[in-house]
Image (tube, rainbow, N blue to C red; front, top):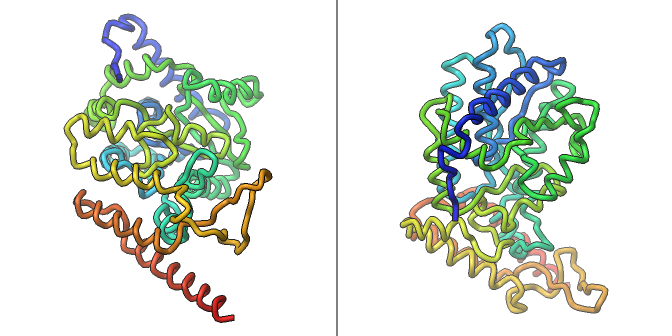
Length: 379
């Protein structure tokens, strides 16, 4: 169960801890690397919110004439985000954008999306990709890694390099700690190279904060863009967990769709049970129940032989080293059933779950595939 630390957990030190974080950010902003833009990977969760808060505070402490480094707050919308999470993200980024403009801060807000031919529904319903699982997690690369990495590469190319500011912390997991410790003695000071993105450096301003300190900061200090962080705290309480993190490479992908990430894509079939949506339903948001039922059904049909083609999309009949048949994509009939059920859920939910451009792309893919099959059958 999610618990917010009591205010007496850090009676004398939280002000000092927070002041040190903001001062470190201020100094890094004014460092010799100031010609390189900062790109904040902003998921809207607790850690990226604290990082953005610290950067906002640091910029307010710097004279306007010295605020020469541009700061990009970049969020990724997979187009199948949990509706409550994307609503929170939209509200917060709108406030950040408005406050930045009002205060004259060099902050711009951006949103990345998967390419039109690589959305979740186009790949799953249009091309028949099987529901993602731990061994075939095709969604992470196409929905999360490629869009955000493309944005970073573009900014790095424009400026010669870019610094990605992430809210990763050492105490998140053993894999995160190993990744952080691998570069802790790097000669770049606070900056470390990104292994998968040439020209990109990583800055982790809250790497040493404990989770209790993160929550204490959010509960103690008002958001510099207006209001407080109570909506975020409630989001975590209702979801009974944490967010899927910003993912920039396959090495970081294990944080997406695991027991450590409880809200992210509402369609996530990698996890056995969607604790986030169930938490929202348990908190009284019963209109999410059709989404849970659809996701559970989508997960259940993945390996049903009658739902899958025998031949893979490359036209080959494939077997693993043990001689077990590896089925191909969902059949056209299965894809039609998935779409029919999805549109019914969309009607029940009362908000858009699949866009018109996606529906048009799906119909085109089906037509091309059926035409190709007809041509082959006629040979």
